[in-house]
Image (cartoon, rainbow over all chains, first blue to last red; front, top):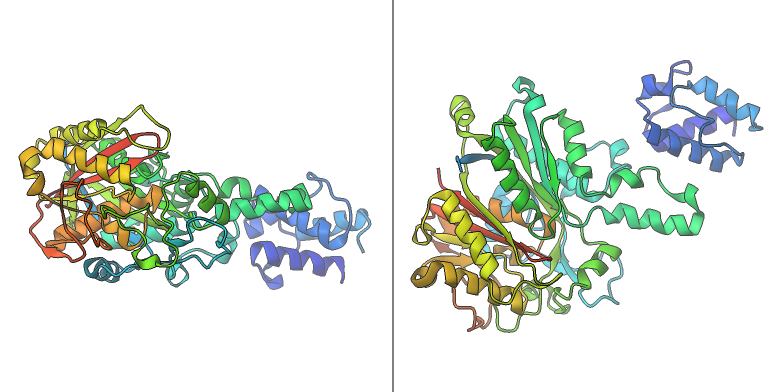
Length: 78
Length: 410
């Protein structure tokens, strides 16, 4: 599965949002109302799904969908 | 105290969520206590409880939020919505900076917490939901209600075992007396039907072990009682001062007119053996209301269903009511659905205001042989018709907590 699809799946699991509701360039905080606790759950979900090492501070609610995909790719996700 | 009106009620109980259905079950004395099936309770000494079955049908909570909160907050949110609707309040026209939330809870949200704690030891820290910390603690429902309705006034959560929500309602009424808020959402919620919560309750030694006969297991004031059955649920009321009630021409179920509370200072679980501190709390409430014992038409009892609990409650009533203790009628309707611990006081208040409204004394069910040592006038097994103008509600909690609240028909 592509990284983009994995992120969409985790966002759906945590936030109950459909892929078409995600604006890829909007901050998660602004577009989807993500709070800091939800961001922790998203990070843990991505870490498990992708099998890569992500620290607590790598992904933030102020990141957009596209920024998160780029960070994950830079850490070896593919 | 200046009287404070109850203008709305919200019920989440094993006997129903709709107030008409709830009252029909209470009036008829239909037991809602069942064998626990949510988890394997076969190794517990107490295996019966009152369960809420219709929560999803009434839920006003999104699936996204449901992942973050425990069942006790969910029940609190549903109860609050029912109470607000029932009161006819239009929140868009209210100054929500002066809307308060006073809740009672005894044990927190363990259905969520214990699952996550298990995962902590199996999977490590990343196996734990980040929502666990904000889901389990007793003030979580207060926070969720505040967030949902944007209510930002002076608020509080009371933790006082089985007296939690009666204290919360009383402190809410006192807060309105001091003019700190315009109106208050008050009550309590409890979700004790979980493996760990049941274990905590069981260690008190106060739970019934009549596991083969759940419907008749909880039998307060019966000679052969052996403790109470736990129950889950929530009870929420809307409290408003008189001037507001008149202005918006609101329906008033009853007024809170007096409150008293004391502590025994004797034992961490059992009440004092003389019942004197409870008697003091009742006298305090009567004085606060400006009423005499003979003015009370009905007593909604704590009804712990333990030997010492029932006996000392009867002793306190006899001490306060003297010659009239055989005249005033009393009952413990909570035996019908179980003891909701931190929410039980709110359900007692709601049951009592419905009893006033319908002029019916709800029964104490499951009494086969009344304990002759408990010399009070009990309404046994069958409801009776009676005009109720003033009613006393008694709640007690472990640690020797005694509370008495007086309600008056409008």
